[in-house]
Amino acid sequence: MTDFLVNEAIEDYAFLSTGKEPALLQELIDATNANMGWPQKLSGRLVGRTLKMLTALAQPKVALEIGMFTGYSALSIAEGMPADGRLICCETNPRAIEFAQGFFDRSEHGHKIEVIFGRALDTLETLDLELDFSFIDADKRNYLEYYERVKAMTRPGGLIVLDNVLWSGKVLQPESEIDDTLVELNRRIAADPEVENIFLTVRDGINVVRKL
Image (tube, rainbow, N blue to C red; front, top):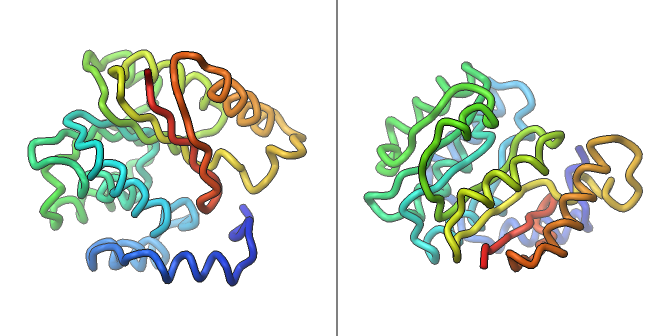
């Protein structure tokens, strides 16, 4: 995946001009880079601080994350949630879950996070709850189904945030099934009368959706 969709100096400036994440999250970044494969899957400061800001403003009591990886985004979301908030994370990588849990146990926000191992589509079938906030950052082939299922579970006024919606710019000239899926997702969200959205060109693209 391309590291920079805008001028690299502009990306660096935005990074340096955004408030730092807590020290534990900086340690998590270093440990992920040193010990885990595909460390570029980690959300990073710009996306993480965006998530924290959104949850700090929305104050969701019940939140969902599809695709947790090593827990950076989960801790960013939990940081902005109220003390009695509950964040359910779906993840299929046992090693990533074990890695993330070590950081959750050390965080003052870790008690808000519950990890469920398994396919997210299967997990969603077992959840009987109304969502205030969701972050979708998992396998792109299922993004359309994730969006529709999560939207159905979201209360009016709730937020759904989808990552990687620019897909390294491939949405401009789609050549694969995954490219086409993301193009259709973005088209569907923009045309959906049940939501309002803003498409942010942060890192690899974030679509912020509010259910009406």
